[in-house]
Image (cartoon, rainbow over all chains, first blue to last red; front, side):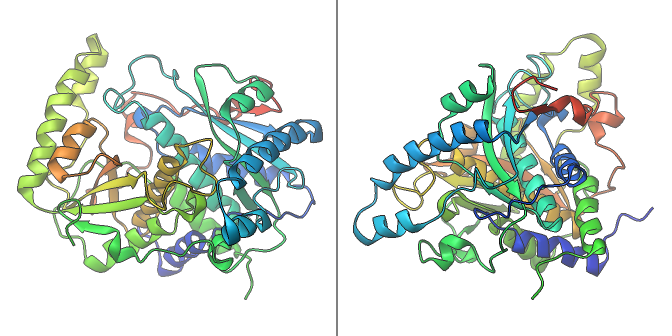
Length: 216
Length: 216
């Protein structure tokens, strides 16, 4: 077995990375179970500290449950909008920031901070590495979804306490992401926040330092 | 422009996800700059909350600098080994957990918690979403490296205070990952911790819940 990737395979992975989008506008057709399984399996193949695999995936399809989450979003988003002024506030209010109700599947991704017991290889000094592993799983999931033609949107304007209550998540488990998943109305050619003039991509070269913080 | 991925493209992305490994044994041949640039650019195309792009990348090649990091690892790893007993302690000590000196490039990935100012779209209630974004960037980097035939190993047995001091990282910036990057001696067919009997992959179906925490 060769461990090399062909030029075409390389290009496919870079394409998925470049064309992945945060999706907030979904078609309502259902997500086939087989596709969801493949996407979850991609997440499950993420790296994890000490092979801890601290993640769980709560698959949400019930409109009543989604509506409870959407109500939390609406409340928190009203607060958030108040932080911006003038044109920026207007632009903020015009952005569609979630597709909770319309996406056929919502997914709450969590991190069990006690999995594998008190001693986890590689997790003695930097305790949040379990959360970091869970985020790697989410990025795998996001890329897998992209190649399935499935959109994913991360809704971060929520409160973890509310997610705990809605889903019965115990105290030793941290909600990490609340995702909307389904077929998108479209995949935009650039990030929506860039297209709408909210923010621009920073030139990569300004982010890379040589040997020490701040050294070009 | 079609937004669909072909079957071959899909397979390539799943292959990268499945064959990505945490690499700790490197060949010492240099990493071409062009490959490093492509890998960093993949990281830079990760999703970020409010398009915040909070990451920086400190590229480390100087043996003297690596040696300082390696000394921190050695000290912390000696402590960590003491947490295991009997056969488990013996197995722990037999594992190679880092390739800091031999990897041609080390990379400290950081998160600037103040980037984009005090009001970041989507980051009002869950403040750590900037760290989560940085982890998504790391997973992009890891997959891009895999298709380049380049290995990445995440060294988590370090202390952030030491990384701050060694690299001059200011207080508002969080070190998120310290990575060893270079051509690997080999890509293993399964995770090393699994092959060596340290831990097993958990069956995915036990990690997926329906509508609520704990519901199968």
